Length: 585
Image (tube, rainbow, N blue to C red; front, top):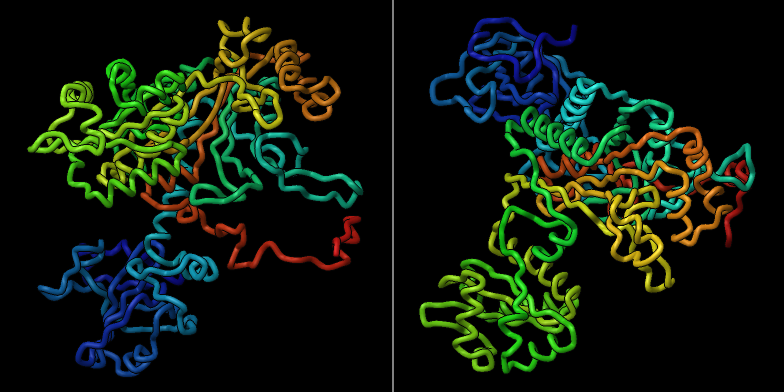
């Protein structure tokens, strides 16, 4: 046996116990002949002491120790002298008086220190990910990831779910992003696709009678990358038969409660808030609203329609909207900051931004004389604005005004430090449109995917006004981020065929793309639905990380490159030849 304990197991109860520890040299300090080493393993740190009076040869050997040497020591657990305790670590009350040292491996000079305080460029961190992952914060993130996986599996197992794997090499189907394609050596000219999600297979599992399925699924999408996107990512894929939205909401709410309780010791408030898609846009200017702060949008048309301010008047007369938002206690913003906010709002598509400060001296605004004292008082009353607040107003087409103010709301929350990273506000956004109109191609597309069921009461509009049809789709949103998306699916063949027709898909095209799914519907498909929360996003959220790359062991950078392995890389001509492929010059 190499070791008897890990580096957080020992405490004051173990005094005088003979132990063996193994790990990496985290730091070294020479104090008047004594050498102190902080030994690190994945669990934490333990202080070692090498005393020349106890063993001179071992002490000389300890002089050779450097950062990240791998060592094995034997020694006796001792209480630290008074005043030298370290309450920041679990083993801070003890140290190991070493009587044996074995250097298991040495380490070259490090490209960066293994500590959490140093700022390190991301590409350097990823190129030496094996060192980066030794840092305590990164180890905690990866250990937490494993812990959350177990919580998910235990919870779903207790609810009667089966974990079933679905293929990684599958058929290319249109799902919203580009597929990663894999050429088939045995079938020249044909390609597998890596799954963007297990969507079709989990529906087939419902038809197959496995009425409660889940999978911690690897998914692949060839799309532009950002802090919450990776070419390959992990989601908790769930599907159930004979259920409705309420059953799915309850399941996920209790799962999230379990995760936050067991992983963080935080008690979530359930049930989560619910907003329709229309309500979310009207109140927050986005279908992913952050509920950690208020600052709701209000429509001012009625009280400003008779204003002499021509900008507002013309917008209302042309069918537009005058919409505002209150930033509480923001009157300290300088003119430069207000100019920056105006430019930001214009960059979001609006034509301009009106601001009204409420100060001890009264109202301040570039348009004060155009609005007049009486109207300013009405606007302030509508927003319940107090001294120290600012009201921001956009006059434009309704969609532009709400979207611009929705983005301004997020910017204001960051400036006012209202986006507390340790507070979690979940909500469900429901009743999304079933279709969205594609202006470029002059046709209708699915808002989510073509298997999403319309609300029963809206099916009658399939022969008429497609824009008013609501879907049975829902998003799980937390702190302004979409954590997961799902829907109740279509299970009747004729309704599915009608949706394909509306999307401009012929029977032949539908058969070529989705035939293996639609064929199963002809043999008794149950009502079913599901959801797929993103695990990487969830972990980034609960660790308060700025990017999902912080919670993935071996991620790609923003260019889709792995600096550690240098993937993707070129392959040999023989490999291409075997696949019946050639490279264009």
